[in-house]
Length: 600
Image 1: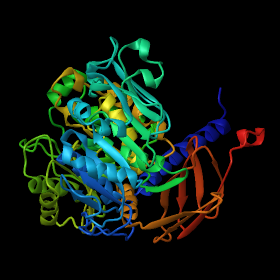
Image 2: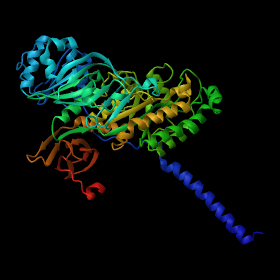
Image 3: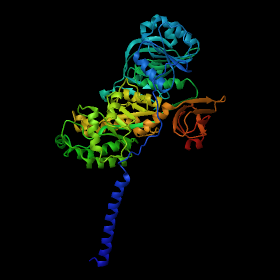
Image 4: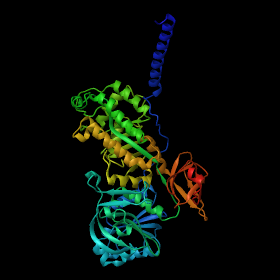
């Protein structure tokens, strides 16, 4: 039997515990401050960054060829790296341009006989040459001087079908990769071009990527397999060759950067350093299509989002150390008359804040609706709960930047300064219009493929940047079984892990943070100088106070210390540098194998 004293004590304890739960729960809601955006952007702005017509800059790039795809990607790379680009016509005479340039990029597929004297003159002058595509085998047979320049000893086969490709360590960030077709490999993995000419190279060639004809060749020496990317050392210069279609798409960005940084013993270049996870039209706050949701998941749409989809997405972001950015919508189908729920919005925004996420707007939805009208409907639904929330980002789908800005202006959303478009293999990753940045994803869906993996390696190499964008509409309006949550979540989480596990050293950011880092990157002007002894690297920039990020390659040597900021070794001889100073001095020395260095 419980005494009155004990009963009183137990009652007080229960009331106290209940009170504490109520207070902490209420404090959590109050302190979460979900009605404001914690990712307030800095005052940095960037003006129009279209390529200048000034071709007087040093270290410019020359382009010879007719491929618009190759030219566009080279132009994009030049914009990011603030390099001049000069397109020369066929039959151009060496020395006519008077331009100081460091590399000649050739579209080999459209090479003409009249171009050969110019190319050979560039080689004699020690200018780096890159064949973005290979000439036809007939052209190489007829003009052996070009084949010799490329390091081709013989043409083994004019068209060979590969089983797979091997990317060797040390060229692109992310290490070695094998892209192999097989019985257990899903068909959608195998999206690389596996039909290429087979060349036998000279011994002075260094192969960065090769193909193989069957699994027996998988571990064979690169000299016995069809080369895909290689470098040939001529008497006067380096000649790089890409024996595939990589230079027509985003992968070109990383290859240009890898070529540039492989020419020198110690090299340095700036990056963005930002990894992003963005969910389009999620969460939604209207109980639509609930009949189908009840049939599939035994719960209505809102309950499905709160109890099943949300935990799946946040688990994926947490496991891959990414910060989720949510481009929210009041509803998906704007043709229905269902009303959005303010209570659901309040709860979901609390979850956004708890996960250190960020909410953005959306101009594109599941139904065909005018962007301005959609945004007006969304803002009406958000107004009471999010009247103080500053939206800095917006998903625009396939809208043009101009149309998107017009829709935002009509709805008085002047704070938006970052637009996120749909994935495009041809569109520039980063565009700038006055003080607004437009970015495209580096991957387009939850499905892994070899091309996505290779493209991500290339973009990470060039920019230290990625954006994994994902449409969420089909979870609420599923078209196939692949859109059912269990299948979707398995594909999505697996793809995130496979693609991003090699880049955890780069920072996970919200998209607004990414926009600020992109602005810093685009505004950055820098100079680097290596001491005569090659033991000190000095980096001077025009930015003070904002974090700047650089990749430094030391060709097997190691960074021992730096005057400002910090460094982290990404791979053997490859370092991520972070600094806020206008001048940073980096001490470089030989690698040591002492036990102290090993455990340091």
